[in-house]
Image (cartoon, rainbow, N blue to C red; front, top):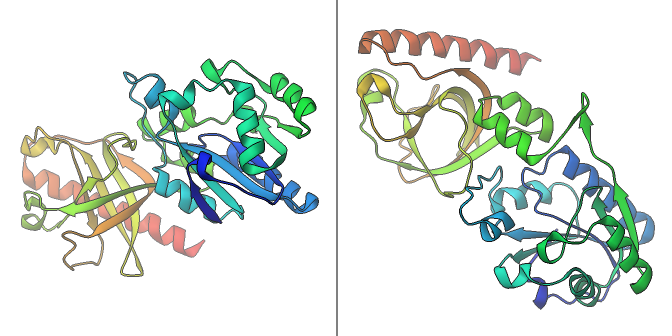
Length: 311
């Protein structure tokens, strides 16, 4: 997959088939569109292209709304690389870009990408104020000589998958819903920074994670079973998101205790995969009670890891 930035600077001579969207989460509904895109590209000998945007359009169009991303742009690129696309075009979304009307935008796609077919979801809207829909797109297709292919919604158990539903599941600690709707574990990347070193003192040393992208969604506070690849080896651990109420912290932190690991992680960048929500964060009456619960959490996690490995 070739990654190109700035739609206006792209010029493709080979005819193409494209789709457009933010595709936050790259969920199964998105994947349905992309599979159709790639399948059609091979049947028609066309180059497959996804046009996506960074930053998220809502951040520009409604600056007061706090949009929390399932994927950072780098995470999205990593997922898309595995799907078999020919090109990914990442265009900077701006106020000026949002003011381009629908027909002018279609002309740009034809001029820059030599589009012969366009695949979009059933609810796709585009152009200034999102004024145009699938029917308008089909009219433009007839006018300018390209085919429009409409993809229906993707349902799981009669529930339409959406990025909004996935964000809600993460905010409620329902990690398994995220995995069910995307096909992969939720990931969180960050730098390991120095903390209070309390974990060392109680026998549970932790790596304190500082998330790099401030727009990245952080799951519900609590304890999770997680994994991370460190120096090409997979480690499991338990991660806490919250305020460490037993110690009276006032700042939110993300700390992970890896099992059977004792190397220095300071200044490393880790990517954490969330496997299972274990429990809510609890304020214990004493440090001894906390240690007892952490030992119990560890045993629970190790049993779950064994079930993963043996299945």
